[in-house]
Length: 366
Ligand SMILES: Cc1ncc(COP(=O)(O)O)c(C=O)c1O
Image (cartoon, rainbow, N blue to C red):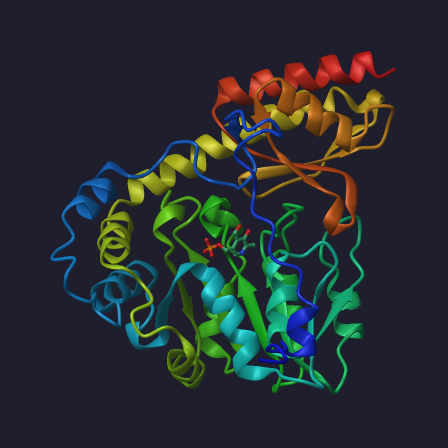
């Protein structure tokens, strides 16, 4: 036999997504603060529901009907305008596949979520990065990067890995500046961590506009990353086209059961948000005290902080130093941030310990 299957050139150009690590270089298990998971675990009600979801010999509901109804009720959205996915990652990827292809451009901000480039390349489109402003999204720069080939704009709000957040007026300005044939995908993976008073208006845009899709996930504040459940909302025509593309039974039996119970346990979500905000604030001020060592925590609305190392202690040395002391974080040279460590907000004890370790490392590096 001669020859071998040849992948499409745009598929060959993809670098696989790099997940957060859970072990050190020597295989030793470490405390994992590299994937923005919930340190409080999962709602006990969701855990109980996923233990008895129904007969595993049967396929799950292909339309996640009960879950969509519960999400619709919680957020005041018609369930017909909601679809569920195998994590929000599935839906983010499908958004590019549905609306872009070879010759088209998919736009996002520099230091955006790593999946956007993969989603663009996967459908043969050209990924385009707009410049940031001090690690945050810049609406003017995004709008200036729009061309007649642009089909999809991705924006994570809050953004991963920077933690930056665009307020409602800026988001509305971004949408208003886009041509109607450009899909604006607002990725709200961390929205449950944002102070409700700072609501960015994404759902209202998705309800009123034909070209806005909002994605959310159960992987973060709901503490269900292992079950892989996400969802999206937008105009009926957007939901309909995405429904044609998604996997037919894309949310598992346990996932649907757990997420449904999770939606009904908003006390757990609120507790996760409040815990995160308190620990994040304390950790940020501990790090800010290391400013004369060139350690700079960026402001964050999410459940992680991007810490920049701009002095004698480098990002790599901080990453290795924390790993030696039992903590795995996310060092980001592959995303143009060799000086950046993204650290998930864990428990207050863990974050106090990390702040102490970073102080010791910074002092030793002088
Ligand atoms: C900004 C952002 N969007 C989407 C996701 C995808 O999460 P999932 O596929 O688990 O819903 C993540 C995960 O880290 C993320 O950080």
